[in-house]
Image 1 (spheres, rainbow, N blue to C red):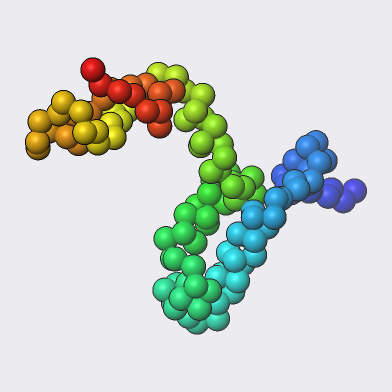
Image 2: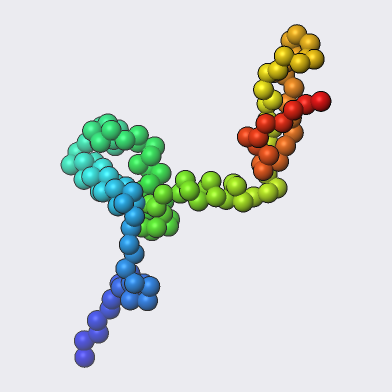
Length: 128
């Protein structure tokens, strides 16, 4: 009797369904494949990155995310980071007040910084 073994990826796909990539993730995967093909054909990684007009550090970062997280690691993360920062109410920042012609003495305007939470960042606060 002959035994047939399937790779682990087969079982992942059968349990979870195929992974659908977003447009930007698909582009990143395409750029990584092109970069690997160029480096496989004898170009250095620097020359291949220059040919693709993408920074080499970006390609290495995408490659690392692909190895560690799989195809989902190539998805765009900027919206996730912005949403997490906005939702985190404990984060605090400093905000520079606008210059005013009020009672500030010469030389102190622009040096006074206000302490505020992330909810207040970007709002205009008057100092009294």
